Length: 179
Image (cartoon, rainbow, N blue to C red):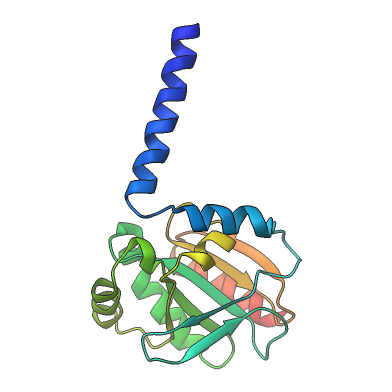
């Protein structure tokens, strides 16, 4: 029994070390996550952030807004992100002007050139934000990508979603708009 416990502890330490060395986790992101202690709860305010986009503009998230918002955290190396990209584009174009969509590239664990290539490949019509420090991903407790957050006009979290079939994604966006 002691041997199994020891093996589990060693495996966990090695996994965390591998994540740290890959750049997906850093001392600053661990400290920032511990310092904020922000819990993401449905119906409550989302953590605010400001990020620059590929177009050079700065976008701010948090607090009341004119339209509901979908924040989609993604990376260019992520297979499911490639699968959902055409659906995100189609749903956005169908409901453009009724909700906002910010595609947040987890640039700290990706690369700028790869993010640019991905956005060009799928011809994203919405802002592509760059989380170069990993602070936004840390605040939103991103464990894997893609992860999306649906936020109402008041700036409150309505739902956390992962890859959905296009019709189900559209259904969730329509519900968000109608609230």
